[in-house]
Image (cartoon, rainbow, N blue to C red; front, side):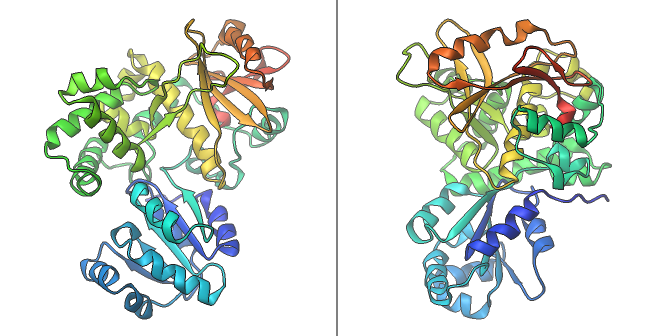
Length: 409
């Protein structure tokens, strides 16, 4: 079994030096516990609230729980005992030192409620998903936030990125990024994802919402997966699954708060009234997404009608990880107006917008960036842009835009 370093290691250790509490959130089985254990210094204690007896103690007598389990302490799946948050606050305020508590949780909504009420200003929040491409290629320490400018491009070239053809890329997309399917290459991915969904529905979903019809919820997840990289249409989703729109919105919120999907917001401001205000939805793991949409092999996936959508999903996920794993907030948007002019991704930084198109092609042309010109009416400076594609090396498409191989991410 192969194991890979995580970029978030450094972010975690840095956060622990400046905050008394560090919380690592993310869906189940992405390696949160392993990350904390690998970073833990000698003498840091560990307790999991998956243990029913420990959970009961934490819920019923949080002060006594913290007497039994001395700091510095890792508390796994802390969302099961929100009663702990106030007790942690009291201890943090009393001891006045950093790195006391490292917490993990896979239900972000419940966690954020407790943190807002008790630990605001005392906790650093880090997001973990499956492996980033850079981590799988053993370049975890060189993964930097993606921004298509000269500085980032020079660093990417120095890393001597691997050249990968479409078959290799789609094998990565088809397999997914969960640590177990990467570390244990012999595992049946279909068996893994089926078991993962079953556990997810039986544990997280039941905790977050009253789902009485598990089949309907599974059908709903499949319907969302089939719409990855598309505009959200609640009416269409609800009609397909046979539920009302209110339920569709509630269930989509469950998928988002448990870290399975990401809603990319449209960029809009008061300068134009013709912008679409509906978000786009993306699955954060392409392996789970292709399993839900029933693609049996990477070759059928790469040549099928779904290939463009899943390729875009993969790129968005990798770009998000490059920020999250460096402890940064990604300010990501997309552009679409009522004339159907669209830009796949806008990254906002320092009051500048960086436009990005995502194309499943090895031969991008200037036609790929024709919509970048419409961004001028947004009232922001439009800076360097990119077309992320399957080309082997980067090439300029204009003075401000480069075609960037996916291998550079």
